[in-house]
Amino acid sequence: MQEKQLTITEWLAIASEQIEKKNLIGARQIYSGIVRSIPDHKKAKPGLLAVTDALDCDYFPILPVESIEEVLENFDRGTIAKCRLQLKELALQYPCSALIQSFLGIFERNNDDMQASLTHFKESYRLNSNEENTKNYANLLIEMKAFPRASLVVDAFLKIHPNSLEILRLKAFILIDTQAFAEAEETLQKAVSSNNQNAGLWEQYGILRLRQNNDKDAILFFDKCHALGLKSVDLFQNLTFAHAKCGNNKKALLYCEKAIQLDENNPQIRHAYSMALLKDEQFLLGWKEFEWRIVARDNVRFKHPSETKTWDGITSLKGKTILVYYEQGLGDTIQFSRYIIELAKLDVKIYFCIQNVLRGLFEGIDFPVTFVDQDDDSVAPDYSISLMSLPFTLLNYQETPLPQNFIFNFIKADIVLVPVEKEERESPFIGICWRGSPSNKNDIHRSMNLEELLPHLPSKAQFFNLQKSLTEEEENLLERHQIVNLAEGLSTFTGTAAICKRLDGVIAVDTSICHLAGSLGIPTFLLLSLASDWRWGKSTDRTVWYDNMKLFKQTSRGEWNAPLKTLKETIEKDIISPFHARADSGKFLGK
Image (cartoon, rainbow, N blue to C red; front, top):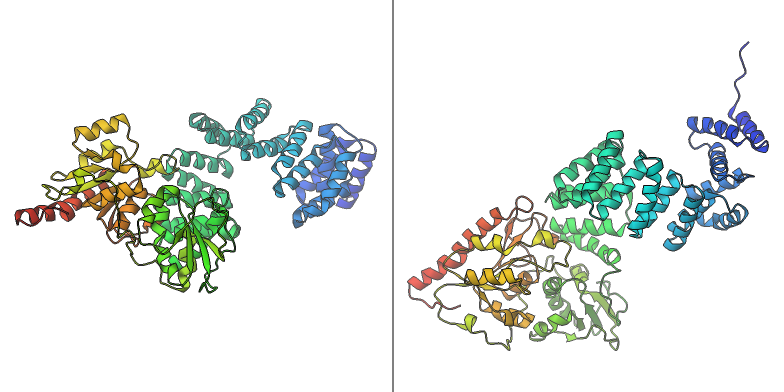
Protein backbone atom coordinates (compact mmCIF):
# COMPACT_ATOMS: atom_id res chain seq x y z
CA MET A 1 0.00 0.00 0.00
CA GLN A 2 1.41 3.38 -1.07
CA GLU A 3 2.29 5.77 1.76
CA LYS A 4 0.29 8.99 1.78
CA GLN A 5 2.18 12.08 0.50
CA LEU A 6 1.92 14.98 2.99
CA THR A 7 0.93 18.43 1.74
CA ILE A 8 3.03 21.51 2.53
CA THR A 9 0.34 22.68 4.93
CA GLU A 10 0.61 19.39 6.79
CA TRP A 11 4.41 19.63 6.91
CA LEU A 12 4.15 23.18 8.30
CA ALA A 13 1.82 21.90 11.02
CA ILE A 14 4.34 19.17 11.91
CA ALA A 15 7.12 21.80 12.05
CA SER A 16 5.05 23.84 14.52
CA GLU A 17 4.55 20.72 16.66
CA GLN A 18 8.32 20.09 16.66
CA ILE A 19 8.94 23.65 17.79
CA GLU A 20 6.51 23.20 20.70
CA LYS A 21 8.47 20.05 21.66
CA LYS A 22 11.72 22.09 21.43
CA ASN A 23 12.93 19.88 18.58
CA LEU A 24 14.29 22.83 16.60
CA ILE A 25 16.60 20.65 14.50
CA GLY A 26 13.64 18.63 13.27
CA ALA A 27 11.65 21.80 12.53
CA ARG A 28 14.61 23.24 10.61
CA GLN A 29 14.82 20.09 8.47
CA ILE A 30 11.15 20.42 7.53
CA TYR A 31 11.41 24.15 6.71
CA SER A 32 14.62 23.55 4.72
CA GLY A 33 12.94 20.86 2.62
CA ILE A 34 10.07 23.20 1.71
CA VAL A 35 12.41 26.15 0.95
CA ARG A 36 14.53 23.97 -1.34
CA SER A 37 11.44 23.46 -3.49
CA ILE A 38 9.88 26.91 -3.01
CA PRO A 39 12.64 29.40 -2.00
CA ASP A 40 10.27 32.28 -1.16
CA HIS A 41 7.51 30.30 0.55
CA LYS A 42 5.73 32.81 2.79
CA LYS A 43 5.51 30.50 5.80
CA ALA A 44 8.53 28.22 5.44
CA LYS A 45 11.09 30.94 4.76
CA PRO A 46 10.38 33.02 7.91
CA GLY A 47 10.06 29.76 9.88
CA LEU A 48 13.49 28.63 8.73
CA LEU A 49 14.99 32.02 9.64
CA ALA A 50 13.42 32.00 13.12
CA VAL A 51 14.43 28.42 13.93
CA THR A 52 17.98 28.80 12.58
CA ASP A 53 18.48 32.02 14.55
CA ALA A 54 17.32 30.33 17.79
CA LEU A 55 19.60 27.34 17.19
CA ASP A 56 22.66 29.42 16.26
CA CYS A 57 22.19 31.88 19.14
CA ASP A 58 20.96 29.26 21.63
CA TYR A 59 17.69 30.75 22.90
CA PHE A 60 14.07 29.63 23.29
CA PRO A 61 11.21 30.32 22.64
CA ILE A 62 11.95 31.19 19.02
CA LEU A 63 10.92 34.43 17.31
CA PRO A 64 7.22 34.50 16.29
CA VAL A 65 7.16 33.21 12.71
CA GLU A 66 4.29 35.54 11.79
CA SER A 67 6.35 38.55 12.95
CA ILE A 68 9.26 37.54 10.71
CA GLU A 69 6.80 37.00 7.89
CA GLU A 70 5.50 40.56 8.31
CA VAL A 71 9.04 41.98 8.45
CA LEU A 72 10.00 40.20 5.22
CA GLU A 73 6.85 41.43 3.46
CA ASN A 74 7.61 45.02 4.44
CA PHE A 75 11.20 44.70 3.23
CA ASP A 76 9.98 43.27 -0.08
CA ARG A 77 7.51 46.14 -0.50
CA GLY A 78 10.11 48.73 0.43
CA THR A 79 7.94 49.86 3.36
CA ILE A 80 10.47 48.92 6.02
CA ALA A 81 9.64 51.98 8.14
CA LYS A 82 6.37 50.29 9.09
CA CYS A 83 8.16 47.49 10.91
CA ARG A 84 10.78 49.58 12.72
CA LEU A 85 8.78 49.78 15.96
CA GLN A 86 8.03 46.07 15.74
CA LEU A 87 11.74 45.28 15.32
CA LYS A 88 12.64 47.45 18.31
CA GLU A 89 10.06 45.64 20.45
CA LEU A 90 11.30 42.23 19.28
CA ALA A 91 14.88 43.25 20.10
CA LEU A 92 13.81 43.95 23.69
CA GLN A 93 11.93 40.65 23.94
CA TYR A 94 14.65 38.61 22.20
CA PRO A 95 18.01 40.18 23.19
CA CYS A 96 19.88 37.10 21.97
CA SER A 97 18.48 37.27 18.42
CA ALA A 98 21.17 38.04 15.83
CA LEU A 99 18.46 38.04 13.15
CA ILE A 100 16.59 41.00 14.67
CA GLN A 101 19.86 42.94 15.08
CA SER A 102 20.65 42.21 11.44
CA PHE A 103 17.23 43.46 10.32
CA LEU A 104 17.72 46.64 12.35
CA GLY A 105 21.16 47.12 10.81
CA ILE A 106 19.68 46.87 7.30
CA PHE A 107 16.89 49.28 8.24
CA GLU A 108 19.31 51.91 9.62
CA ARG A 109 21.61 51.51 6.61
CA ASN A 110 18.69 52.17 4.26
CA ASN A 111 17.93 55.18 6.44
CA ASP A 112 21.55 56.41 5.96
CA ASP A 113 22.31 56.22 9.69
CA MET A 114 25.72 54.58 9.37
CA GLN A 115 26.59 54.65 13.07
CA ALA A 116 23.30 53.08 14.19
CA SER A 117 23.61 50.47 11.45
CA LEU A 118 27.15 49.67 12.58
CA THR A 119 25.96 49.18 16.18
CA HIS A 120 23.33 46.65 15.10
CA PHE A 121 25.57 44.80 12.62
CA LYS A 122 28.31 44.57 15.26
CA GLU A 123 25.84 43.10 17.78
CA SER A 124 24.47 40.67 15.18
CA TYR A 125 28.03 39.56 14.43
CA ARG A 126 28.76 39.15 18.16
CA LEU A 127 25.68 36.99 18.67
CA ASN A 128 26.28 34.86 15.58
CA SER A 129 29.44 35.26 13.47
CA ASN A 130 28.09 33.29 10.50
CA GLU A 131 28.87 34.22 6.91
CA GLU A 132 25.91 36.56 6.44
CA ASN A 133 26.53 38.54 9.63
CA THR A 134 30.27 38.65 8.98
CA LYS A 135 29.58 39.97 5.48
CA ASN A 136 27.15 42.66 6.68
CA TYR A 137 29.49 43.88 9.43
CA ALA A 138 32.63 43.82 7.27
CA ASN A 139 30.89 45.48 4.31
CA LEU A 140 29.79 48.41 6.45
CA LEU A 141 33.26 48.76 7.97
CA ILE A 142 34.68 48.83 4.44
CA GLU A 143 32.13 51.47 3.40
CA MET A 144 33.22 53.56 6.40
CA LYS A 145 36.90 53.07 5.39
CA ALA A 146 37.63 51.24 8.67
CA PHE A 147 39.88 48.79 6.86
CA PRO A 148 41.94 47.48 9.83
CA ARG A 149 38.75 46.51 11.72
CA ALA A 150 37.19 45.00 8.59
CA SER A 151 40.36 42.99 8.00
CA LEU A 152 40.23 41.55 11.53
CA VAL A 153 36.60 40.49 11.01
CA VAL A 154 37.16 38.71 7.69
CA ASP A 155 40.41 37.08 8.81
CA ALA A 156 38.72 35.67 11.93
CA PHE A 157 36.03 34.06 9.75
CA LEU A 158 38.54 32.71 7.21
CA LYS A 159 40.51 30.97 9.95
CA ILE A 160 37.48 28.73 10.50
CA HIS A 161 36.07 28.78 6.94
CA PRO A 162 39.10 29.34 4.65
CA ASN A 163 37.18 28.61 1.43
CA SER A 164 34.26 31.02 1.85
CA LEU A 165 34.01 32.73 -1.54
CA GLU A 166 32.03 35.71 -0.23
CA ILE A 167 34.48 36.47 2.55
CA LEU A 168 37.51 35.86 0.32
CA ARG A 169 36.02 38.45 -2.06
CA LEU A 170 35.70 40.93 0.80
CA LYS A 171 39.28 40.26 1.86
CA ALA A 172 40.42 40.97 -1.71
CA PHE A 173 38.40 44.20 -1.70
CA ILE A 174 40.15 45.37 1.48
CA LEU A 175 43.57 44.46 0.09
CA ILE A 176 42.89 46.29 -3.17
CA ASP A 177 41.71 49.41 -1.35
CA THR A 178 44.83 49.39 0.82
CA GLN A 179 46.98 48.81 -2.31
CA ALA A 180 48.24 45.38 -1.19
CA PHE A 181 47.87 44.22 -4.79
CA ALA A 182 50.10 41.12 -4.62
CA GLU A 183 48.18 39.72 -1.64
CA ALA A 184 44.87 40.60 -3.31
CA GLU A 185 45.97 38.66 -6.39
CA GLU A 186 46.84 35.64 -4.25
CA THR A 187 43.48 35.80 -2.46
CA LEU A 188 41.51 36.03 -5.70
CA GLN A 189 43.49 33.21 -7.33
CA LYS A 190 42.63 30.98 -4.38
CA ALA A 191 38.93 31.87 -4.63
CA VAL A 192 38.72 31.48 -8.41
CA SER A 193 40.50 28.12 -8.31
CA SER A 194 37.73 26.97 -5.97
CA ASN A 195 34.90 28.32 -8.17
CA ASN A 196 35.60 29.98 -11.52
CA GLN A 197 31.90 30.48 -12.22
CA ASN A 198 31.38 33.05 -9.46
CA ALA A 199 30.67 36.37 -11.18
CA GLY A 200 31.42 38.42 -8.05
CA LEU A 201 34.99 37.08 -7.90
CA TRP A 202 35.67 38.00 -11.53
CA GLU A 203 34.23 41.45 -10.88
CA GLN A 204 36.67 41.86 -7.99
CA TYR A 205 39.48 40.68 -10.27
CA GLY A 206 38.45 43.37 -12.75
CA ILE A 207 38.57 46.00 -10.01
CA LEU A 208 42.07 44.84 -9.09
CA ARG A 209 43.19 45.24 -12.71
CA LEU A 210 41.63 48.72 -12.83
CA ARG A 211 43.64 49.75 -9.77
CA GLN A 212 46.75 48.32 -11.40
CA ASN A 213 46.01 50.47 -14.49
CA ASN A 214 45.59 47.34 -16.61
CA ASP A 215 42.30 48.42 -18.15
CA LYS A 216 42.24 45.93 -21.04
CA ASP A 217 42.41 42.95 -18.67
CA ALA A 218 39.88 44.66 -16.41
CA ILE A 219 37.42 44.79 -19.32
CA LEU A 220 38.00 41.08 -20.04
CA PHE A 221 37.19 40.19 -16.42
CA PHE A 222 34.14 42.46 -16.31
CA ASP A 223 32.89 40.94 -19.58
CA LYS A 224 33.27 37.50 -18.00
CA CYS A 225 31.07 38.67 -15.09
CA HIS A 226 28.47 39.84 -17.57
CA ALA A 227 28.62 36.52 -19.43
CA LEU A 228 28.06 34.71 -16.13
CA GLY A 229 24.81 36.63 -15.70
CA LEU A 230 25.80 39.56 -13.50
CA LYS A 231 23.88 42.70 -14.46
CA SER A 232 24.43 45.22 -11.70
CA VAL A 233 24.83 48.98 -11.50
CA ASP A 234 28.36 48.55 -10.10
CA LEU A 235 29.42 46.26 -12.95
CA PHE A 236 28.13 48.64 -15.62
CA GLN A 237 29.79 51.56 -13.82
CA ASN A 238 33.10 49.70 -13.82
CA LEU A 239 32.73 48.85 -17.51
CA THR A 240 31.97 52.52 -18.21
CA PHE A 241 35.07 53.61 -16.33
CA ALA A 242 37.35 50.98 -17.90
CA HIS A 243 36.24 51.73 -21.47
CA ALA A 244 36.59 55.48 -20.86
CA LYS A 245 40.16 54.97 -19.65
CA CYS A 246 40.88 52.96 -22.80
CA GLY A 247 39.50 55.76 -24.97
CA ASN A 248 36.42 53.70 -25.98
CA ASN A 249 33.91 56.49 -25.40
CA LYS A 250 31.11 54.88 -27.44
CA LYS A 251 31.23 51.74 -25.28
CA ALA A 252 31.49 53.88 -22.15
CA LEU A 253 28.25 55.58 -23.21
CA LEU A 254 26.58 52.21 -23.86
CA TYR A 255 27.37 50.79 -20.40
CA CYS A 256 26.49 54.07 -18.72
CA GLU A 257 23.04 53.86 -20.31
CA LYS A 258 22.70 50.26 -19.05
CA ALA A 259 23.52 51.42 -15.52
CA ILE A 260 20.94 54.24 -15.77
CA GLN A 261 18.28 51.71 -16.79
CA LEU A 262 18.90 49.95 -13.47
CA ASP A 263 19.21 53.08 -11.31
CA GLU A 264 18.10 56.24 -13.08
CA ASN A 265 18.48 58.47 -10.01
CA ASN A 266 22.06 57.56 -9.14
CA PRO A 267 23.99 60.89 -9.20
CA GLN A 268 27.40 59.28 -9.84
CA ILE A 269 26.11 57.35 -12.85
CA ARG A 270 24.32 60.38 -14.30
CA HIS A 271 27.46 62.49 -13.78
CA ALA A 272 29.58 59.89 -15.59
CA TYR A 273 26.96 59.81 -18.36
CA SER A 274 27.17 63.59 -18.77
CA MET A 275 30.93 63.47 -19.22
CA ALA A 276 30.67 60.69 -21.79
CA LEU A 277 28.03 62.71 -23.70
CA LEU A 278 30.11 65.88 -23.60
CA LYS A 279 33.20 64.01 -24.76
CA ASP A 280 31.08 62.73 -27.67
CA GLU A 281 30.13 66.40 -28.26
CA GLN A 282 26.42 65.71 -27.66
CA PHE A 283 26.15 69.09 -25.97
CA LEU A 284 22.39 69.53 -25.80
CA LEU A 285 21.81 66.44 -23.66
CA GLY A 286 25.31 66.56 -22.16
CA TRP A 287 24.89 69.95 -20.45
CA LYS A 288 21.52 68.87 -19.07
CA GLU A 289 22.99 65.67 -17.60
CA PHE A 290 26.03 67.63 -16.36
CA GLU A 291 23.79 69.23 -13.73
CA TRP A 292 23.85 65.88 -11.89
CA ARG A 293 27.47 66.65 -10.92
CA ILE A 294 26.19 69.11 -8.31
CA VAL A 295 24.47 66.30 -6.42
CA ALA A 296 27.27 63.80 -7.08
CA ARG A 297 29.98 66.23 -5.94
CA ASP A 298 27.98 68.32 -3.47
CA ASN A 299 30.11 67.34 -0.48
CA VAL A 300 33.30 68.62 -2.13
CA ARG A 301 32.22 71.68 -4.10
CA PHE A 302 32.77 75.25 -2.89
CA LYS A 303 29.69 76.82 -1.32
CA HIS A 304 29.41 80.60 -1.09
CA PRO A 305 27.72 82.02 2.04
CA SER A 306 25.56 84.32 -0.11
CA GLU A 307 24.13 81.55 -2.30
CA THR A 308 20.39 81.93 -2.82
CA LYS A 309 17.76 80.67 -5.24
CA THR A 310 19.40 78.99 -8.25
CA TRP A 311 18.67 80.62 -11.60
CA ASP A 312 16.77 78.19 -13.84
CA GLY A 313 17.80 79.68 -17.18
CA ILE A 314 14.17 80.59 -17.96
CA THR A 315 13.26 83.37 -15.53
CA SER A 316 14.13 86.84 -16.84
CA LEU A 317 17.22 88.40 -15.25
CA LYS A 318 16.59 91.91 -16.56
CA GLY A 319 17.31 94.41 -13.81
CA LYS A 320 18.19 91.62 -11.35
CA THR A 321 21.40 90.58 -9.61
CA ILE A 322 23.07 87.17 -9.76
CA LEU A 323 25.98 85.61 -7.89
CA VAL A 324 28.19 83.36 -10.03
CA TYR A 325 30.68 81.29 -8.04
CA TYR A 326 33.54 79.01 -9.04
CA GLU A 327 33.16 75.30 -8.54
CA GLN A 328 36.18 73.18 -9.41
CA GLY A 329 39.78 73.81 -10.53
CA LEU A 330 41.62 76.89 -11.74
CA GLY A 331 41.52 75.71 -15.34
CA ASP A 332 37.75 75.21 -15.10
CA THR A 333 37.31 78.79 -13.92
CA ILE A 334 39.42 80.19 -16.77
CA GLN A 335 37.69 78.01 -19.37
CA PHE A 336 34.09 78.64 -18.28
CA SER A 337 34.47 82.33 -17.51
CA ARG A 338 33.73 83.05 -21.20
CA TYR A 339 30.07 82.40 -20.35
CA ILE A 340 30.08 85.46 -18.11
CA ILE A 341 30.21 87.58 -21.29
CA GLU A 342 27.04 85.88 -22.54
CA LEU A 343 25.32 86.19 -19.16
CA ALA A 344 26.01 89.94 -19.08
CA LYS A 345 24.00 90.33 -22.32
CA LEU A 346 20.86 89.53 -20.30
CA ASP A 347 20.96 92.97 -18.63
CA VAL A 348 21.82 91.56 -15.20
CA LYS A 349 24.28 92.75 -12.56
CA ILE A 350 26.82 89.99 -11.92
CA TYR A 351 28.68 89.28 -8.69
CA PHE A 352 31.57 86.96 -9.47
CA CYS A 353 33.43 84.83 -6.92
CA ILE A 354 36.60 83.11 -8.12
CA GLN A 355 39.61 81.50 -6.47
CA ASN A 356 41.84 84.01 -4.70
CA VAL A 357 44.89 83.13 -6.81
CA LEU A 358 42.99 84.18 -9.96
CA ARG A 359 41.75 87.55 -8.67
CA GLY A 360 44.80 89.51 -9.85
CA LEU A 361 44.47 88.05 -13.35
CA PHE A 362 40.73 88.65 -13.72
CA GLU A 363 40.79 92.12 -12.18
CA GLY A 364 43.22 93.18 -14.92
CA ILE A 365 40.59 92.42 -17.56
CA ASP A 366 37.70 94.57 -18.73
CA PHE A 367 35.12 92.17 -17.29
CA PRO A 368 31.41 93.05 -16.69
CA VAL A 369 31.29 91.87 -13.07
CA THR A 370 31.73 92.95 -9.48
CA PHE A 371 34.18 90.59 -7.79
CA VAL A 372 33.27 89.30 -4.33
CA ASP A 373 35.35 87.41 -1.78
CA GLN A 374 34.79 83.76 -0.97
CA ASP A 375 33.57 84.54 2.56
CA ASP A 376 31.50 87.65 1.74
CA ASP A 377 28.09 87.10 3.31
CA SER A 378 26.93 90.69 2.73
CA VAL A 379 25.91 90.12 -0.91
CA ALA A 380 22.16 89.74 -1.37
CA PRO A 381 21.66 88.61 -4.99
CA ASP A 382 18.31 87.72 -6.49
CA TYR A 383 19.76 84.50 -7.89
CA SER A 384 22.95 82.47 -7.74
CA ILE A 385 24.50 79.81 -9.95
CA SER A 386 27.67 77.77 -10.37
CA LEU A 387 29.95 79.00 -13.15
CA MET A 388 29.94 75.53 -14.73
CA SER A 389 26.13 75.47 -14.91
CA LEU A 390 26.05 78.47 -17.26
CA PRO A 391 26.38 76.40 -20.49
CA PHE A 392 23.14 74.61 -19.56
CA THR A 393 21.16 77.63 -18.35
CA LEU A 394 22.27 79.75 -21.30
CA LEU A 395 21.08 77.19 -23.86
CA ASN A 396 17.97 79.34 -24.30
CA TYR A 397 20.07 82.31 -25.37
CA GLN A 398 22.97 81.00 -27.47
CA GLU A 399 24.22 78.01 -29.42
CA THR A 400 26.35 75.39 -27.78
CA PRO A 401 29.23 75.13 -27.47
CA LEU A 402 30.01 78.81 -27.09
CA PRO A 403 32.05 80.07 -30.05
CA GLN A 404 35.70 80.83 -29.33
CA ASN A 405 36.10 84.03 -27.35
CA PHE A 406 39.48 85.22 -26.06
CA ILE A 407 38.54 87.01 -22.89
CA PHE A 408 42.10 87.75 -21.80
CA ASN A 409 42.70 90.37 -24.44
CA PHE A 410 44.29 92.92 -22.12
CA ILE A 411 46.91 91.91 -19.56
CA LYS A 412 48.66 94.41 -17.33
CA ALA A 413 51.97 93.02 -16.08
CA ASP A 414 53.71 94.53 -13.09
CA ILE A 415 56.86 92.55 -13.85
CA VAL A 416 59.31 93.34 -16.63
CA LEU A 417 60.96 90.06 -17.58
CA VAL A 418 63.98 90.91 -19.69
CA PRO A 419 64.41 87.53 -21.45
CA VAL A 420 60.92 87.59 -22.97
CA GLU A 421 60.84 91.37 -23.57
CA LYS A 422 63.56 91.13 -26.21
CA GLU A 423 62.26 92.53 -29.48
CA GLU A 424 65.03 91.11 -31.69
CA ARG A 425 65.06 87.32 -31.58
CA GLU A 426 67.21 84.74 -33.25
CA SER A 427 64.60 82.02 -32.72
CA PRO A 428 60.95 81.72 -31.63
CA PHE A 429 60.10 81.68 -27.91
CA ILE A 430 58.12 78.65 -26.68
CA GLY A 431 56.96 77.85 -23.14
CA ILE A 432 56.78 74.33 -21.69
CA CYS A 433 54.68 72.80 -18.87
CA TRP A 434 54.90 69.04 -18.39
CA ARG A 435 52.90 68.23 -15.25
CA GLY A 436 49.88 69.32 -13.24
CA SER A 437 49.09 69.32 -9.55
CA PRO A 438 49.81 65.95 -7.89
CA SER A 439 46.64 66.43 -5.80
CA ASN A 440 44.57 65.70 -8.92
CA LYS A 441 43.66 61.98 -8.90
CA ASN A 442 44.27 61.79 -12.67
CA ASP A 443 47.67 63.49 -12.53
CA ILE A 444 49.57 60.23 -12.95
CA HIS A 445 48.02 59.90 -16.42
CA ARG A 446 47.96 63.51 -17.64
CA SER A 447 51.52 64.44 -16.57
CA MET A 448 54.89 63.29 -17.87
CA ASN A 449 58.49 63.43 -16.75
CA LEU A 450 60.64 66.29 -18.02
CA GLU A 451 63.12 63.68 -19.31
CA GLU A 452 60.41 62.35 -21.66
CA LEU A 453 59.68 65.78 -23.13
CA LEU A 454 63.20 67.19 -23.60
CA PRO A 455 64.43 64.87 -26.41
CA HIS A 456 61.37 65.77 -28.49
CA LEU A 457 61.77 69.54 -28.34
CA PRO A 458 62.76 70.85 -31.78
CA SER A 459 65.98 72.77 -32.33
CA LYS A 460 66.11 76.39 -33.54
CA ALA A 461 63.77 77.57 -30.75
CA GLN A 462 64.32 79.11 -27.32
CA PHE A 463 62.33 77.36 -24.61
CA PHE A 464 61.02 78.86 -21.37
CA ASN A 465 59.91 77.00 -18.27
CA LEU A 466 56.27 77.57 -17.22
CA GLN A 467 56.33 74.89 -14.52
CA LYS A 468 56.09 75.95 -10.87
CA SER A 469 57.66 74.15 -7.88
CA LEU A 470 60.55 72.46 -9.64
CA THR A 471 62.53 69.62 -8.15
CA GLU A 472 66.31 69.95 -7.92
CA GLU A 473 66.67 67.37 -10.68
CA GLU A 474 64.30 69.34 -12.96
CA GLU A 475 66.23 72.58 -12.31
CA ASN A 476 69.45 70.84 -13.30
CA LEU A 477 67.88 69.44 -16.47
CA LEU A 478 66.58 72.87 -17.49
CA GLU A 479 70.00 74.42 -16.99
CA ARG A 480 71.72 71.61 -18.89
CA HIS A 481 69.36 72.05 -21.87
CA GLN A 482 69.59 75.87 -21.76
CA ILE A 483 65.90 76.34 -21.01
CA VAL A 484 65.22 79.73 -19.47
CA ASN A 485 63.71 79.46 -15.99
CA LEU A 486 61.70 82.57 -15.09
CA ALA A 487 60.74 81.29 -11.63
CA GLU A 488 60.11 84.77 -10.21
CA GLY A 489 57.52 85.51 -12.88
CA LEU A 490 55.47 82.35 -12.23
CA SER A 491 54.46 83.14 -8.66
CA THR A 492 51.18 84.72 -9.83
CA PHE A 493 48.82 84.06 -12.73
CA THR A 494 49.27 87.69 -13.78
CA GLY A 495 53.00 87.15 -14.07
CA THR A 496 52.55 83.87 -15.94
CA ALA A 497 50.09 85.54 -18.32
CA ALA A 498 52.59 88.36 -18.94
CA ILE A 499 55.24 85.80 -19.87
CA CYS A 500 52.86 83.81 -22.08
CA LYS A 501 51.79 86.93 -24.01
CA ARG A 502 55.40 87.34 -25.13
CA LEU A 503 55.74 83.76 -26.35
CA ASP A 504 55.24 82.39 -29.85
CA GLY A 505 53.71 79.17 -28.51
CA VAL A 506 53.06 77.08 -25.42
CA ILE A 507 53.48 73.32 -24.98
CA ALA A 508 51.46 71.98 -22.03
CA VAL A 509 49.74 69.00 -20.53
CA ASP A 510 46.13 69.20 -19.36
CA THR A 511 46.45 71.72 -16.54
CA SER A 512 45.49 75.37 -15.94
CA ILE A 513 48.39 76.65 -18.10
CA CYS A 514 46.79 75.24 -21.25
CA HIS A 515 43.55 77.15 -20.50
CA LEU A 516 45.49 80.32 -19.76
CA ALA A 517 47.45 80.08 -23.01
CA GLY A 518 44.32 79.12 -24.93
CA SER A 519 42.42 82.13 -23.61
CA LEU A 520 45.31 84.47 -24.43
CA GLY A 521 45.13 83.45 -28.09
CA ILE A 522 48.65 81.99 -28.12
CA PRO A 523 49.32 78.94 -30.34
CA THR A 524 48.91 76.17 -27.79
CA PHE A 525 50.05 72.57 -28.20
CA LEU A 526 48.24 70.30 -25.74
CA LEU A 527 49.55 66.83 -24.85
CA LEU A 528 46.78 64.47 -23.78
CA SER A 529 46.62 60.97 -22.32
CA LEU A 530 44.59 58.22 -23.98
CA ALA A 531 41.80 58.74 -21.45
CA SER A 532 41.80 62.50 -21.80
CA ASP A 533 39.24 64.64 -20.00
CA TRP A 534 35.74 65.04 -21.46
CA ARG A 535 36.33 68.66 -22.42
CA TRP A 536 38.80 67.75 -25.17
CA GLY A 537 36.08 66.02 -27.19
CA LYS A 538 36.31 63.24 -29.73
CA SER A 539 38.52 64.95 -32.30
CA THR A 540 42.08 63.72 -32.49
CA ASP A 541 43.72 67.10 -33.06
CA ARG A 542 41.34 70.06 -32.51
CA THR A 543 38.99 71.31 -29.81
CA VAL A 544 35.80 73.36 -29.91
CA TRP A 545 37.01 75.37 -26.90
CA TYR A 546 40.14 77.04 -28.31
CA ASP A 547 40.67 77.49 -32.03
CA ASN A 548 44.32 78.39 -31.42
CA MET A 549 44.96 74.99 -29.79
CA LYS A 550 46.11 71.70 -31.30
CA LEU A 551 45.80 68.38 -29.53
CA PHE A 552 48.30 65.53 -29.40
CA LYS A 553 46.69 62.41 -27.91
CA GLN A 554 48.25 59.15 -26.86
CA THR A 555 47.27 56.16 -29.00
CA SER A 556 48.15 53.70 -26.23
CA ARG A 557 47.99 54.34 -22.52
CA GLY A 558 51.11 55.80 -20.92
CA GLU A 559 52.97 55.97 -24.24
CA TRP A 560 54.08 59.52 -25.04
CA ASN A 561 56.51 58.85 -27.93
CA ALA A 562 53.91 58.97 -30.72
CA PRO A 563 52.20 62.25 -29.68
CA LEU A 564 55.58 63.85 -28.89
CA LYS A 565 56.90 62.95 -32.34
CA THR A 566 53.83 64.54 -33.98
CA LEU A 567 54.16 67.54 -31.66
CA LYS A 568 57.76 68.16 -32.76
CA GLU A 569 56.81 67.99 -36.45
CA THR A 570 53.85 70.35 -35.95
CA ILE A 571 55.87 72.98 -34.04
CA GLU A 572 58.57 72.91 -36.72
CA LYS A 573 55.88 73.45 -39.38
CA ASP A 574 53.67 75.95 -37.53
CA ILE A 575 56.17 78.01 -35.52
CA ILE A 576 59.83 77.45 -36.37
CA SER A 577 59.77 77.33 -40.19
CA PRO A 578 57.57 80.46 -40.57
CA PHE A 579 59.74 82.32 -38.05
CA HIS A 580 62.98 81.57 -39.87
CA ALA A 581 61.35 82.23 -43.23
CA ARG A 582 60.57 85.74 -42.00
CA ALA A 583 64.14 86.06 -40.71
CA ASP A 584 65.57 85.05 -44.08
CA SER A 585 63.45 87.70 -45.77
CA GLY A 586 64.71 90.34 -43.34
CA LYS A 587 61.33 90.90 -41.71
CA PHE A 588 60.80 91.74 -38.04
CA LEU A 589 62.05 88.93 -35.80
CA GLY A 590 60.12 89.78 -32.66
CA LYS A 591 56.69 88.63 -31.56
